[in-house]
Figure (cartoon, rainbow, N blue to C red):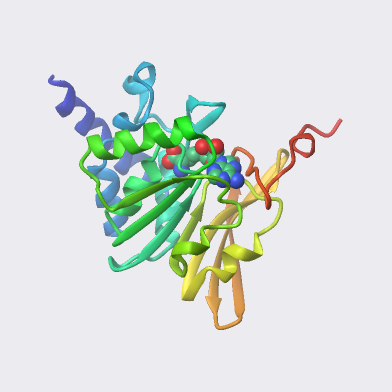
Length: 224
Ligand code: SAH
């Protein structure tokens, strides 16, 4: 089979077996996951397993998240198409690419310049032009472009960073993993005036958030 056709068939199976079967049912999200070529966002040596049911290494000790988790976090934002969204922890750029199909404008921020550069190249290669990739510490958000109707954070924070809540627009939603090395919970926060509702979604395992509102090096370790 030709490679592109083979990858498409793997992508359809990924959506049916890993994502829809586990309960993600937002049609826009499922369609975006069927369309974005995940193999274009992983290093060449992993392209053949790009559609497998787990995270994969992308360099700098970081990972591209499991497809199901990307779908679930995206679904939590309830996007309708007109939003400005912030994606913190660009990594491979894959989550940003999914968001780009569902929102008007995506800002994404990554602390490793090399990963940001590769993500920019991958997004351009697949023809996505409504994502702006920034380099820097995104643990306190990106106030220049706020407010956001949705914010996704793909690295575990010790607690919800207050600036992220403040950068949400009215009714806006933030999804992030909260916790440490030993365990984390995916949380969704929604702004209702000056009150923020929090829902705990499920246990997860992410790389640490670094930077001002993240974990300091020595704090992220096994308790012995
Ligand atoms: N969304 C990514 C997942 C990347 S893993 C994808 O689809 O591939 C999380 C990323 O967060 C890593 O690339 C890591 O370098 C980045 N990160 C961690 N702390 C950060 C911070 N304070 N600011 C910006 N990026 C950060």
